[in-house]
Length: 171
Image (cartoon, helix red, strand yellow):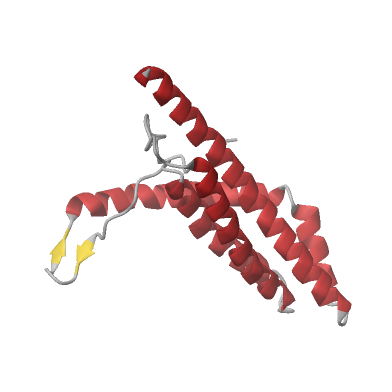
């Protein structure tokens, strides 16, 4: 399952000096930090508010992980406020990126659907006094971390494959 946005094409090459192991570790640390936000949102006793927060965080996090692995390019600002200019090419690219964001949200939705039973269980446990919120927070942390780590592993596999093909051509 390739979770890179559909609007983005995989690059033919990536930086051969990119230490994929280090990038993977950095991304895992980033996921742990964001998963803590997910756990915090799970404590709030408003039904499905945490799911909305998780979806929002994931739609930003997954492309960021892909970018760190060199699978999508960095973005330049579409509007230069200092020079009061609009970069029309970048605006066009943003429109394509928006389509990619919609595709990413689709991937997030499909991934979350696979955890539907767990998410419903998390919603129910929120309303059990004291211990229920702790269980909901733990489940939120674990589900979020699993979804994001699956994406990291997929990006790592794809980036490693591209680097190996690239190395094979250079030899």
